[in-house]
Length: 326
Image 1 (tube, rainbow, N blue to C red):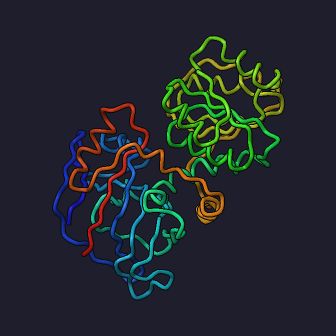
Image 2 (image 1 turned 90 degrees about the vertical axis):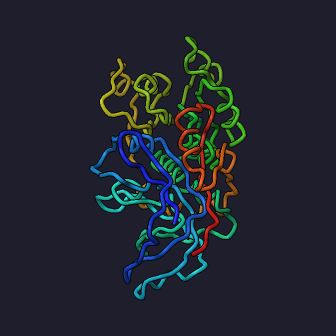
């Protein structure tokens, strides 16, 4: 079978590997659509937040069809359409455990969820990044149509926040310097956009909110300067949710605003415990994230997909697709 392998030192290849076998509690899956994430770039370049070793098959954002099940598996059968979680205890699927960027791969039954019939393979492979944005809205405490939210950054996670918040009736303002991504945010429900690099960004927000500023700020860029600016854009008693990840960066911040504005500040990682809720939300809300996918490549051309992510800054989400059957 074909599989994309990361080999170390920024090297990768589409390799021919043996068909995997399954244990009694495992499921053999045929990949249908697999997203490439910035975390995959970190992995390719030899850095990640937990230990791992090369070679490794990436792929933690995926949808797949069940091919076979172990004798102890009771929740799934061949032909079922599934998605799967990537944080497995201390292990991360697609990082410390080889992932889904292969014609066939293996997962434990407990990692998997049925993909609702109304969602396509492409939409299924967007569940993982969307679950992070959706979880941010859950952690914003009683987020509803009375709130004005500012989302800093319109990458895939920030765009997921936009879609989830707008579907809750929230008035969403996106701070994003790239006009194409800002337009994409508006197509997903953002009412207004700001250029966060403008010197008068705070004044623009005051004009949009009648001086009240944001009830909720979602920091989704992972840039230290934006993390600091979130405090400035927050209104009195605002809730701040930090989603973007930066390890070791720094920027000057007016921390006294946490007290003077009585701010609630919360950091989150991933989307623990909300996958069933996320899938129900997607199935019932009608949110369609497929416009985030700006390029698709078949598995045989997975190297081109990796290069698109590395070289083309206009890409939002690149997918690798497969229709292989055993």
